[in-house]
Length: 258
Image (cartoon, rainbow, N blue to C red; front, side, top):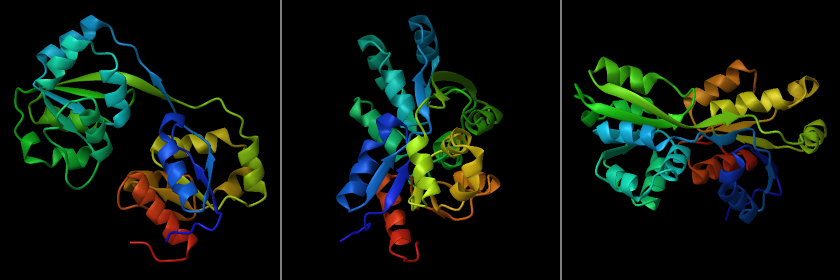
């Protein structure tokens, strides 16, 4: 049985995505400390814009569960039916599950890996000359996917359905926990989340903050954390909440992860 020994763990997921991980921590005798360092702000699309891009697309790629939620919530029945006639690709398991939840079949998803590179390595995206590909994403996302698909001859369009912002929340409780060295771990699920965490907290606390072990879900986030000066970083084998919990458990109980 997992025992997190009443360890206090900072959960930085956006507020609407944090409950499952917090519940897993609670069920296993840990104490989740909610501190969203990223806010997902919807971008409202016009129907003509949706129609133009969706009608023309052969393939629709969703880059995140947020992209699915905030795009599909703006589709009427006709547009939703139209989406279901397209080849729909998902970058990772959470994104695929979100599509299935709204009744959209997932035609392609990497079996290993959960980023643009993993998707681009699949055979179906190697020969895309003259294909019209619509990428549903957040503003200022990575350009790798579109750049490579364009190089392969595809005609790529973006539909930005959300933007990322720093939440306006009270940081005083977290600052107190850091000062008193009561935070044992910090979970990080995006590059923006770790950058915002540093921005949101007072500079005078940064030395203590960067000594707290991090649990991150990708090599890219690990590299960002290292560049910011964090000293102890453990990477999960997958981005799921179960994988995060497993890595947290190995750290709390002094086991070797992997």
